[in-house]
Image (tube, rainbow, N blue to C red; front, side):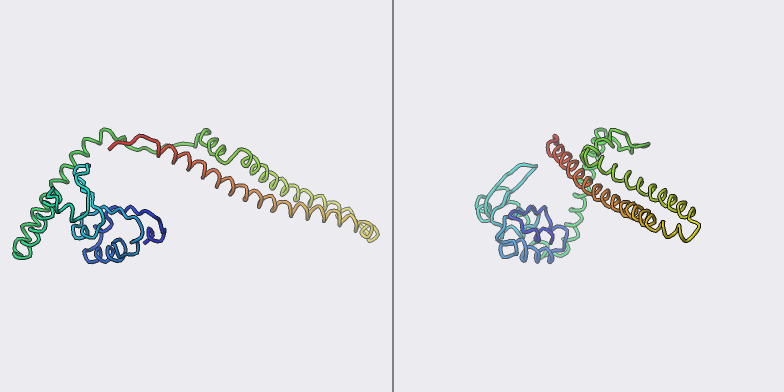
Length: 256
């Protein structure tokens, strides 16, 4: 469903019908993937083992041991009398025998299970041989290296990193300054002893109040700017690191 909502021009479908029941798979193929489905005007590349879907496909590519054996429409491949036609006839004959003789279904399923078990055993043997080539993952312990921190700071740009550091230092400096200024203001009021001095110092109180208010408003303002700076730097750093990682992954050698 998520793939359909993307409204792409090309859809690569890696055997999506094998994970559902046969009637559900038929419904999905008819309503979505097939020639009358939602994606009928899109290019669909479907990998499938479902024989019943092949007659409705525009082009069939027969793969064997990682190689392309035959290419063509369903009717063309049947007329070619090749491996695909032999496989279809064998499959059809087996289906007809199972329908005519229900007792053969148990033997057929036993044969299929034994065949699947032998394939799994061969896969396990090959995995044992590959274990020597795969190193066990281990987690690093201890503090984060300075080189890692510096690489992240460079990804976030040095200018934003130093700006963020300055903003938070300034916000803490304003917090300390506001507490210090409040102490100075309190000491100034303590020296006022009579009504005459209180009236004369009313203008000075406004002076202390104005500076204290400026310090109090400046501290959260610098914190807010610092948070915006962190968010912007994080977005830039994430994009830079992701692009570098994607660049290296897409250009790394691959082996099968």
